[in-house]
Amino acid sequence: MELKDQILQTKERKKGFLNAMPEDTRKQIGIYTKLDKVAKRFWIIIVASLIISGAVYLVSCFVATQENRFVVHAILAGLWVVAGIVLAFRIRALAAQGKKAVDLGAPDYVEELNAINSKLAGLEKAEKQRLIAEKEEAKAKARAEAAQRKADEAQQRQQAVVQGTTPQQPVNPPLNTPDNPPERQ
Image 1 (cartoon, helix red, strand yellow):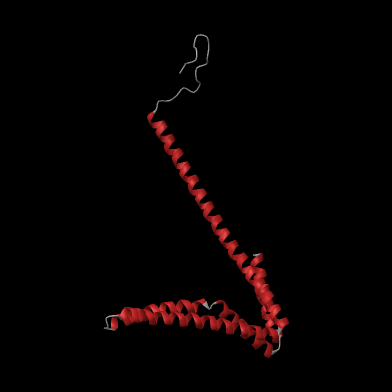
Image 2: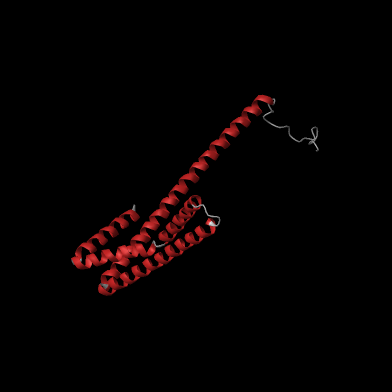
């Protein structure tokens, strides 16, 4: 529960930090946060351009009736992919420029926000790892209990077989005396 409390405290700290700053700075920080997300997720644009270019290629190949339609449409699809990649990197560059501009306008606020966000990300990662460890521990405990039950059942079956098929052994084995030498194998 300690990690959950720390996460909640950090979120409250972030909320209080954002509410305490002036309105124009808060807008700048909001833009900074959005630009940071865009800069981190620009790969989605590249993947989308690959998917769309594949769909465009397939549709155009089936619709066209020319002899060399596959080559022409492959070139068009390739251009679509290149355009998507260029667009993605351009968006990332613009986001980086916007982040830098906001950072220059409110450096103390940006540093504090980044510190809070990194602490929050670390706490959330630790909480996730703790939950995974708890699940693994529960699975291991369940496997151990299942193995113990199987061992108990096997032992009961073995005892039932031994009691049901073999005659009773004498309780005290014969002692080694001069009249009764030990059996040699």
